[in-house]
Image (cartoon, rainbow, N blue to C red; front, side, top):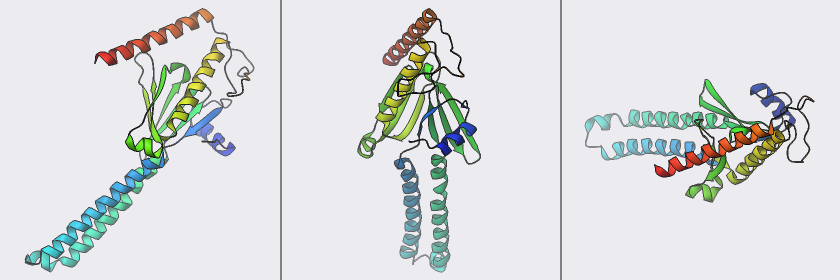
Amino acid sequence: MQVTPQNDQYLHKLLPIDADEKIIGVYRHHWFAYMTSWVVGVLTALLIMGVAIALVMFGNNDSTIANYKGPILAGAAVLATVVVAGSFVPVYLRTQEQLVLTEEALVQVLQPSLFANKIDQLGLQHISDVSVTQDFFGSIFGYGTVHLETPGEQDNFDFVIVPTPHEMAREISQAHENYNAALMGGRMPTTLGNGNWQSKNTQNMQIDPEQYQQFLQFQQMMAEQQKQSGKDQ
C-alpha cells in the first residue's frame, strides 16, 4: 500500500516509530476477511427467518403458534436485523488492523475489541525466515498468510488474509537484507530501495564485524534447531 504524506504523519504519531524512521509500506487485510463476516451474518439472519416462517406455516395445528404468528415473525425479523447489524462489528475491527513496515522494524496493530487495541513490534534483525501459505480460496482470490520466523524463544509472527502475500513477503525480505547490510557497513538505514544509505541523525553506528558474524551464526543455528524440532514433532 502506498504511504501518503498524511498517512505517514499519522502513523508516526500513532505508533512507536522514530520521527526520522522511514515507513516503507502499510498492509491491511484482503477484502475476503471482511466478506466472511458479512456472509456469516446474512446466513444466520436467513436461518432465523426461515425457522420462524416454518413455524408459522407448519404450526397451524398448534393453537399457541397460531395465536402468535405476528409476534413470532416480528421477533424473528428484529433478531435477524440485530445479527446483520452485529456483523458490522468484526468488519470494523478488521479495518482497524494493519501491518506497518519501516526500515528498521515491523509494527502490527491488532484490534481485539472495540475499546482495546494491541501493538506488537518486531525488529528486522530478528527475522530468520519469511514464508507464505495459501489455502484453496486464497489461491483463487489472491490472499494468504505471511509467516515470520524468529530465532530462539521469540514468538513467530503471522499476518493472515493479506492481499498479494508473495509481494509482501518479498518486500519484508528485502527490507531485512537491506537492514543487515547497513549494520554490516556500520550504518543505520534511512532510505531503502535505491541503494543510497545515510547515517541516522548524521552519526554512524559502529558495529564490530566479528561480533556481528557471531550473531548471524547464532541466528542460523537457532533457526536450524527450530526447523529440526518441528520435523521431529
